[in-house]
Image (cartoon, rainbow, N blue to C red):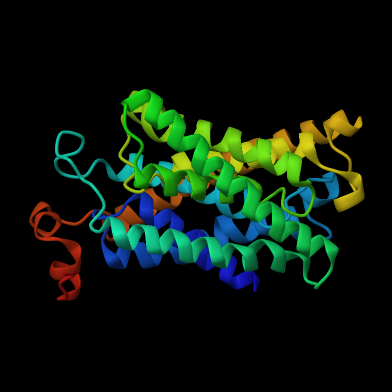
Length: 302
């Protein structure tokens, strides 16, 4: 069960540098990253003798371990590798919006197992984790949609499903600690903040994160991790949050976010530079123009 968490994390990072990295470089990068970055962060957060665990951090199903880790690594990778050819002047919409919606739906269903399964039991806490995993992404999808509607004049299906994923990310660390009311607010905030990060912040800083790994997963994970410290309910997860008088929990959550960001960013940069030095990270321009599926694997996506 825990190993599947890492597989998901690697897949998220790959979305940030899609269409640019050599397949061989990707294999080396993920092999090294899993041992040097993912495993230590996972140990710090979830092991009984882990540093952040001992500090009292709340991360039910991977807000820091999976999503902040992936978002920061994806951002660093996108910056180190550079922008796709034609970006941002050439429109680069999803290959197939219908498949994107189907994928988001399947992801949402799987997320019930991801979050509720982290209770490691069929009990009331797992049931609450399932409920908030329904509420938060629904709120986030609507939040993103209405903000996009107001900002751009048109709501989009792509925006709706992006908001849903942002809500799923944000509720992940909080799933076993908050109630329906907290989940609703976390979702609404996550949809708005992830929209801003995936549009305004992305354009402001000028990086090319192909599938908004940082904007949705990194930022959504930060929102969820911090707000867990606000909305945690003692009757659900055993630890009160800020609203129940435990202001110290909010600082613990913020500190865990900062540790994860710094540790992941520095070591991801080092790993990328090492792989680039030995075998090179980026494909040739001709390969990128032809498409990695065809050029590297001899397969065409139709």
